[in-house]
Image (cartoon, rainbow, N blue to C red):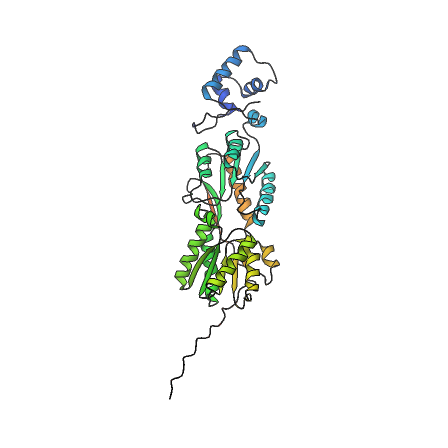
Amino acid sequence: MEQVVARQGEGRRVRIYDIARHAGVSATTVSAMLTGKRPVSAATRERIERSIATLGYRANASAKALAHGRTDSIALLIPPAGRSLSAFEVDFIARVVQQARASDYDVLVSTSLEEEKVFARLVEEERVDGIILLEVCFEDRRVERLVESGTPFVAVGRTADPRQISWVDIDFSSLVRSFVRHLRDLRHEDLVLVNTPRPLYDRGYGPARRAQSGFLDACEEFGVRGRVVYCDANPEAGFRVTSEILADDPSFTGLVVMNDYAIGGIYQALTLGGRRIPHDTSIISLADARWADALSPRLTAAPQPVDEMAVTAVRLLTAKLADPALPPEGHLILPPVTLRESTAAAPIRVAARAPERPR
């Protein structure tokens, strides 16, 4: 079976109804000719073939898309940031599947880093009706390609200028500012931001860029010292990076962590380095609530708003599929901070006593 789509560069996908209208026949007649389910006269076949040649087509394996102009499927594209999917990503997949099923859509999940193959299979061959895209960068070629192709999609995250797309995102800048303010209120004056891996930041990864900008701006606003370190997405890297800053400049008393993969290693390095949490060092993070409660001491953190982000992403996409004329829509989420035992008042620094003058 073949699916009729636009020639490359034409922007709008050609569907079975376009062929039927151009050939002056019904859509069922076009479908019957292409699928061979019932005979079509030679004259009608010639008209349909001429319309297909005029409008352009690409072979596609999706029978449902051919017959009905849709697949009743959406794709969820999640290139993992670490060695495996995070708790947020796993929960996000489950919630998207649940929400999409309620709207009669199946979900195809791809965690592949082979972008070209994924786009050729899903977008060019029209195997899905729409896409939910995660791990978005400031300048993101995937977003550009989806806009160019006319494929309905929703981004979980934002580009530098997201006005042309529908998206849902965490307000990372405001969230990190609230972290810094909380530590400042506890009289911490020397903070370190543990950010995502450096290659992700350099690539323009939205959460990393916005979190770091919010952190440095907040440190300046509140008059505290702020430093940034980059950490690979695994506990071993968290242990190594924390050990390095303890050795290089141990004056910090507060850690803001935007790398949930690394938290276990950070805790371990602080403990082995003789730092008590929170008596010597306070930690605050964006982290899954189950993970935050499992640590000892329990982690002061803002929860990942999985449900709200997944439900909003599916709602925006299905609305767009039902009405392609809908304008782009964005949703910014600021999750609340749950105070636990990993943050406390900064340790009191005893000033060096001036030597007494000889009498």
